Image (cartoon, rainbow, N blue to C red; front, side):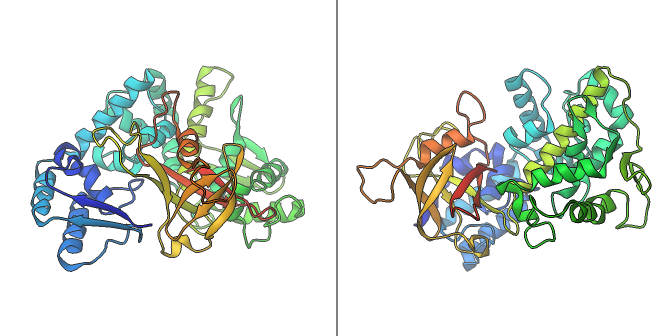
Length: 409
């Protein structure tokens, strides 16, 4: 099922030059969850049009015909585009106005036009609190928190991750009362066992000693946690002791030794909320990105509709696009059982997309296609039905029932 888009100079996709920093990378298939590079995107588009060199990020099932005169307009769009810094600031203020308060990191990640990495780069800062400060949105309470524990919060935002484990450790340390300074290995083991028993998280332990998360011995889990995320957090991978964490061999405790907020007041709860927010954002980004065992695909509009509307408000249909590359390996073809929003359907997986969802596996057009309403329900960010600017889903296959679950990514 090829998807076609023809680009003309008058088409609003490029005519609105104020957003060229966003639209050019989108057209070239760049991952908008990372730092978009509009100049690089334009070069890729020109190579595609003149030499037939397809940008790597464009799904195999998508074809874009670019009129020669449109390239001139694309270059002009980039030349006169509003600076990325101002676009990020504008988007931050718009999100604040929608929420009626200072946005959190995870809210920005779900509803903002740009990624946190792009916002930091565009504003020349190194952490979320300073992004808010540059936009004039940092609350007095958050400013106090930044003065006391800002470096630790920055470490959560920027620490390297090859698996989800480091963030799962911090998630285990977040309680209703705030952020715990100390957690025993037995408590971590119980938390990890529960977390990785969920189908949506199993891919991170596939092929590991703890693959059978529910039944593997506690001693094996404990050793795995010590050798991996705890070792990384205490600086074992760099031979430089961490300024934030230590491991106590005698008591078998993992302890936060950085600055913090003690007591039972509002500041301590705010500190816990800030840690949890950053951990949530990192895990959202991790599970929402393609990787080994993580089938993450874009949701794209199909058919005809009112092109003057935004993606969120468009009445066009939706399908899940996964193309033909290595990212698709392991995804089936034909009719298969699908679980979405707590309901079971049959999905028709074609070569490049999942475009049909029905109550039974049939090509009978009298049986309605439920894919679009179910995707809108899954992805809606609020009561208005607003969709994310970069809607994605993740397919998770149950190892026992051969059912594919569709999750928001």
